[in-house]
Image (cartoon, rainbow, N blue to C red):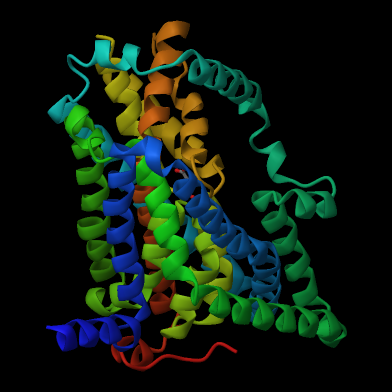
Length: 443
Ligand code: ASP
């Protein structure tokens, strides 16, 4: 018996791949987090300790995101050189991201209109909001309303250095794209800058490799803390709503993406998912597409998708393409109107879906951002200010578990679109993708 246990520990420690370590860390985190939730008083100091470990893990990955995004875009775009090819990549990217997000909002609306999870839950929604949360969401609602008109202006940085310092992803990407395009047009004189960014890219990838050594404990800590806040009993109280969201996200991940891969490319679905599984697990643990971006790029490039495609499609996807979030926002808003007995006209449902597409793409790839921008979608549907605040507060209370799942979907779709474009443009090495034992050293 002793020997068996020993063998098991050695296998867990050495013999199995890192993906499995992270997977086991998530399972252990869910179980332990639930235990802490049920015995919350005794374990508070330990949960606080785990929170520090988890936050430290997120911070170190976030630390590389800005230098990585800038360097990936500069190196990628200046290596494409030809602006016609960039235009081709850009058009395809918009087309596929749009298709994937439209599928998401249609699935979200269809499921919630069919299963009607909102009927009869009004009293539960009203109870769930504490005054503290109500104040918080009230402020968020006011802020979002003020921002609606500025969405497009805010994409253009007045001062790129300020945007860099504040970590504003969309303005940074906007500037990096234009700057790199200019670099690609000035000939050999661009070499010092491009070489500089090549080094920055290689170094940030190396740091990502190091960080991933700590992925299992980091994800374990994050999952434990998250589950200790809500507890698994959450699934029994609002089962139907959560089931609709999870089924929707599941359809997107396991039906829509494989269909898109089959329909628009010859990328083998199984090998593709094996290639990106590590990024998906990290997305689940961190609930942040931005923080997962270094991993998404590493997984895709290691298994044969060219740097040209990854550096262009993935950073933009991590900030603009949030189909999981759009699905959640559509379903959640229709759910709330059902709970308050408001019947939406077909045109209003279309309005919800369109606003969810806009709201999701303006949200940052960080924890909980999709919940804040949902305020845009909730406007003008006949909910009273009190109902808006209550509904919003209810969603707030259950958001972490939903966020982990929708972020996994957001990250998967970025990689799906990168793979399809790489296939269409002959920018994928199928020998690498099809041989699960092989990978390319990026650095
Ligand atoms: N956390 C999500 C992401 O990073 C955004 C959201 O809150 O929906 O992709």
